[in-house]
Image (cartoon, rainbow, N blue to C red; front, side, top):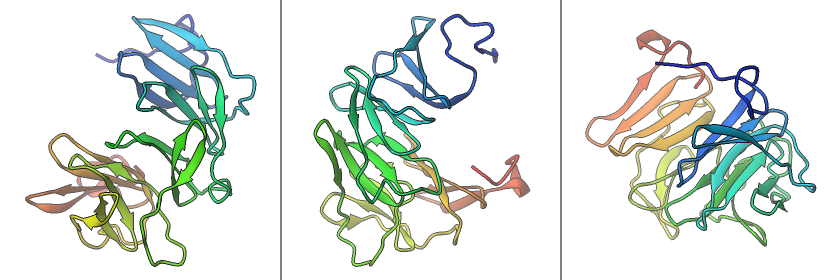
Amino acid sequence: KFEVIDSGTIEGLTNSRATSLFEDSRGAVWIGHDTGDLTCCSDGKFRPVPRAPSWSGGTISGICADAAGDVWAANLRGVCVRLRDGLVVPPLPEQAEEPSVSPQLLLDRQNRLLLIRNGYVATVTATGCRRVDFQTTDTRPYYARVAAARAGGLWVPASGRVRRWTGESWQDDLGPYPWGEAFVMTMHESSSGRLFVGTLERGLFIHDPALGWMNLTQTNGLPQDWV
C-alpha cells in the first residue's frame, strides 16, 4: 500500500517538497528538497543532513554516488557537493549558463560520475569537472540527457540519432529520433535491455531490441504527455 510521508508527521524529514531521490549501496535513501536541504532515511529513520558551509544551496536537482561510494548532490546551477566532507565542485564554464531543464547527475558503467547541463556532459571528480568528448563534427552539439548502457558506455541522443558511445566510437545505432523535435527529459535502460526515453511533449518512447520503438501517450494510457 501507499503511505503518505511528510514533514508534518515524520520526525527528521526536512520538508515535504522533494525534488530528487537516490538510494545508495547500503540501502539508505537520500532526499533532495527545493530549499537546498537534504534528508537521509536509513533503518526507517529520517535525519536532516547538515549543509556544507561553502554550498550555495538552491533546489537539489540530482543525487548520486561515485565509484568510491561517496554521495554527491547537484543544484539547478550544476554546482556539485560531496556530502562526506562538503567539497564543492563547480560545473564547466559552458555548463554554467542558464539551462532549459534541470541538470542530470549519474554514474555510468565505467564508474564515472557525470554531470549533464546546458547540453554538455562532464565527469565530476574531486579536482573539478572535465568535459566528455564524443568526437562529433557538429559545431554546437547538444546532449540533453544520457543513460548508462548495460553493454558498456552511454546511450546518447545527439545529431538526430540515438546511439551508444563506448568511449572510443559509436555503436548500436537505433536510428533517427522517433520523437522529432520534442525535448528529452529523462532516459534509462532497464534490466531487460529496453531503452526508455521520456520527452517534454511526446510522451514515453520505449525501444525494444526485438520490436523497435514504441510510444506511450495520453491516447494509449499515460495521464499526460510530459514525462
